[in-house]
Image (cartoon, rainbow, N blue to C red; front, side, top):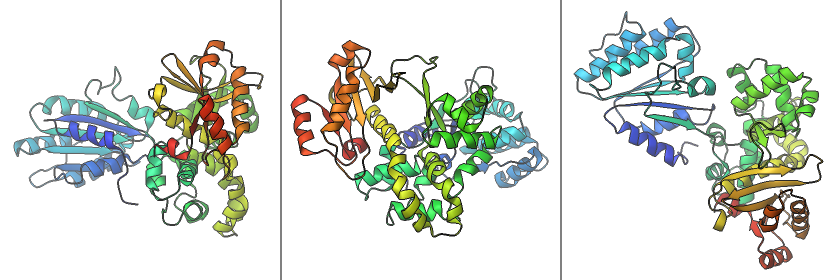
Length: 463
């Protein structure tokens, strides 16, 4: 797919910044979110761009390639160091009365090779931006490194006019990659391929979900066949084996610290470190109970990336079979029968995103807080509690293959809310049910009479 999907606010922010006399922009985020594609889209008709993409090599090698790619008529960069090359390029544009947009992509590699580069850019910017039409754009994927470039004490502190963290697409945005699919299938597409733009762009809308997964993920020649392992390699985690073990446990549905430690075979200090790495890389998310403070010990660990969860849970265990069997056969016999088990927990994540986007409507169009609630004894489990001002909503999420939701789901939600510890909130809270394949007529009748909100696939997707 070559068409550009969504990113309306990000495009507007970049265009507004680049329309200024001069600007300094930082674009960062998780790998494969479409950062480079976004910049190419915004700058596609701009003739004043010098674009350089760094890679893992030495400073001397990077500098030689930068000078070769950035050279322009009348600009002699041979023999220059980083500071001189950047200065000469900037001065030449200013003397010619031209605008210069300098994009340094995969900047984390350049910074690793030449740690002084941030200070060099600071000097170039401070010296030249007021007397030239200079637009510097730094772009990269190392979340920890790039997100702190503008912090206090860093050379570039206070310089950025725009700091743009590009997030993965949510379920509503991801659904726009396959607009012709049914609403439940669009939800499933997010539950399998996740929200990374690079992954979603590989989905074949004409072929459908099964064939897209077989061709792109299950086939040993598929682009995404080893994508999660590639991600761990490129992110330089402290131990790929430990990260692999933790991701496998979380993908299988283990949420508690103790069980994850046991499954992964890691001690507490080591598990703490690995979990922090995976949370920072946005591969695992730390889930708090509704109303708990950030320092609470009552936390759960969930997959942050649906595709990584899908791969570790359903693809990896079948890699041996994929060496000899046809991908579609493995899909039909091994993966499709377990797909609903995978999509169930992720459906809660989809509904939560929709709730945050205003899917509950009315008094809950603006939501201040959303989180699950669970009791320590395991008797009470509410998928989503949402607060808007002093109003509270309780949401039960049920992913069922092709069958509509019936009254048993409402009975279950009422039972759990009756044990919710904040009695005043439980008494005045509004109930909602969410299901991808709709609701039976008798449930609709009762829901209408009792004021229970119903969220089908269309409501979740904002159709």
